[in-house]
Length: 220
Image (tube, rainbow, N blue to C red; front, top):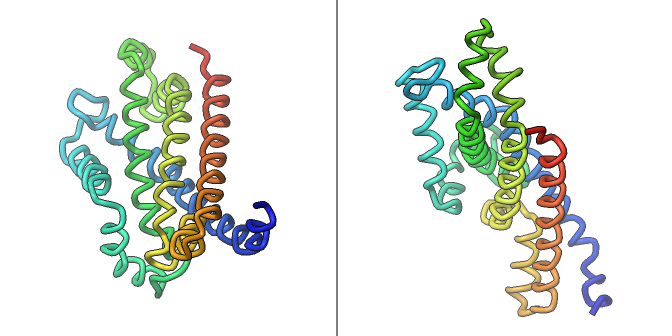
């Protein structure tokens, strides 16, 4: 069995590398854009510190619309945008564009939910002490919600792994595309289930690392 799988060693490593690129880029966008977006939605909600109906509606609408799209349809719908941004729509890097849009929406919602779990008393105390909005965010909200945010990021990354498996539709490659082309389409079910096992191990490793970090930084 191992000999049969090892004959595809080069292709498997290439596919894992493509999956790593897809997940890495989307995770960076999730943190750099999704974290501020989720925070903005929290702050501008009704009765929020920076209550603003327009900002809240726009941010919330983006998150809801992107998350409601079937991902394969969203990939196809994003092809003109990807071609406009990068000059092409096929390949691993172009495939990361639609995944990054989804990553931002998914993580932004997790961030909002984590911040909503922060007791209102902490927010009131911070404001009564004269904390500015940046100080409120960095020294109170993120400190109190950090464990939940890490768990949210962990769940988000696991979702990115799942979404990355359909990137073959736009030539994005990845381990899911390899499993479909070399396993399913060739009726090589031993190889197919071996790749499934690899994906399960990857997901379990991500979950273990995320849970461990969240537990260590949770000081509540």
